Length: 95
Image (tube, rainbow, N blue to C red):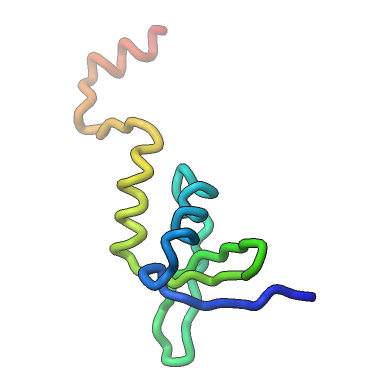
């Protein structure tokens, strides 16, 4: 028997389901987001997620995805290339 499918807005999820999502995606779910056009022609972003009882497609908006990304923290430290001097580049090539 297949699981019931649920299409729901992230803000309307129970705290338990939100907690499950956060524990299953501790480093963020940005790469798991799917995008599609709804019947009204609007672009929708959603996260597919399954529990033992349900198969969810959780509607996300850009603000929620940015918040989630900030809460997950930076993946790695990056440096703007304009901040690197020519001398630092030359030192890097000598290593």
